[in-house]
Image (cartoon, rainbow, N blue to C red):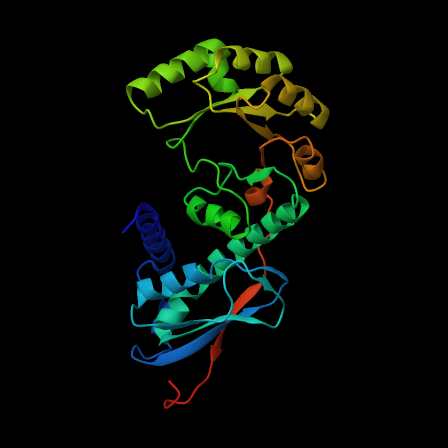
Length: 291
């Protein structure tokens, strides 16, 4: 089992424990434990579907023998009235997992839909779209998966998989030069595979990183730069480092940033401004023979 699968299994287990507590008494009090049933995921809002494979894993976590039929794939456009999947399992399993499945899929579909809107704006441009760490605690795994489903690119997942020297790191360290030198010595000694990204707040910062960062810094972040300022910065950088525009970029402005030729734009709003979409899980009443 890889790290993603381990984290997903942990997320599902903890989420079910949070919801069930010492018992799903609504189901326990009304449905015989051995009774089987079928349910269908109904789409009620236009967008990009995300979370079908997560739903399948949730049901199979609760009941490995559950039958799960995928009717629409993650990443497909969806319309009201369509169905995404059917599941046949113990009714206790269906009812206990229902809210977790919907919470995941509604949130993920909202993120994937917003991400696709940004990707449509970036069509034809060199620039790639990044998410950020502005995520919901303990739900980052699926929020970033939704960005990927929507066509975006995951930036660092956490504090452990890249060094990003932001304004506070730089100020506490005593300046850009000291921060870069300390970070480079650190990775040389302990984590040689880590890449270093440096946030810059002015063209003077960019000049400084260009003069001292060769062979040490991988990417320069241009934070809260206007598109015109980014063009100036890119001329200074001259393709010696990867470049990332960040800060206040939205659907109305993302094309103007892409038109500069910057390598990446990062948009925290992909996740924290996304609106959940409307989905529902409905019982399908079948005969015993059909089950």
